[in-house]
Length: 490
Image 1 (cartoon, rainbow, N blue to C red):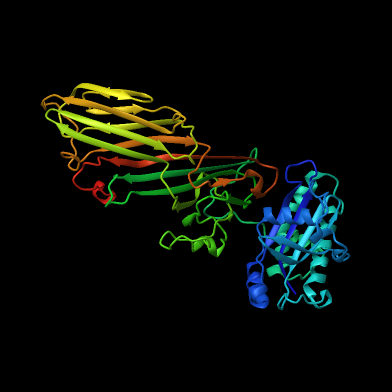
Image 2: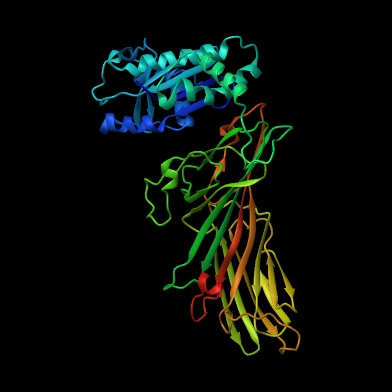
């Protein structure tokens, strides 16, 4: 007798989703047993959002549920037991115990210790009666003596610790959660919680959680048939949690859109308490396929006082954000340059800034420039032998821009001129510098409504994300040999 997962959902008719998951708990050890017992009929536990939508649909609590749906509303599917089968991801999750009371929906998925086809009689599944007992126990705990939303939120924040005692590893030991609360309170009086050595103090003040996702994109583009262009995305999630208490608990979920690029090579901060094995095993070394884990990526942790990097990741995005072509030809004392840049249609066309730097090494100062740009403006730094093409905040509607011109140099003087041991002769590059706010190339985002905080007070939650260029090179297509990342480190 065990439970695979449980949920507490507040029914909110006036909101977009018509409900909010107030609490959820999964038991990975029970889930492994379900895979063994159910065999080919095993259906995995979905994430909170698809479960919420499927359950509200089955309970006819969505506004668009007024039409007749045969799979749910026909006479052959009259439900008298509060046991449901939910369509999730093309499969049916069964059995799901669910009932609604006091504006709250209580749900759990019991373990069935046999194959699910054909469906066994309900009376033979002992986990169902245990599931009802657990959910009724949680209901009694939440609403016994509860007078307002503040008290309800306080009791919800106590559930993780209570279930560790009342329902360890998904097996119900005591449905009276008040007994578990009393034992925890007694233990806290006799053995007060100690300040961990790694946490120098505690926070006092207004609770708030800040989450920032920063992705940096690198690229090496050559415009050569025999040399492949390369690009890579590196991401970091930075958090700052101002929460009262010695050991507050926070869970942050990173999500991807339908066409998002899966996160790989994920490294987490030591404060993260547990992780799904699929997160740890996703590697850029493995070939990408449709079975790659695409989230949500959940990170439960106990935050330190200072700002910290919750995790790092990489991703194999299908195309670089800006495709470029650069050609430089030497004609006597002049250089003839041609540049074209194209913003990929999938990239957000709203930059904080976007510039193309074109340096000229191992030459004298720039004495004369003749040029034509289709968009933006060009600045000339003569003594630094540098051209900066200021593109601005948007590409034109065509998404393509161009620059062409000739650059004349004077004789090398005694003054220090830019020198580079790689960029000799025709070996030259253009380097892009840009930043896009409220955007990531993978599509990764942190939904502030999915952030779970188990601490006193309701915190203010803020999220932001940005994409930054880093080592974004476009090399002269007439260069004799390609330059790699390794050679740049010499």
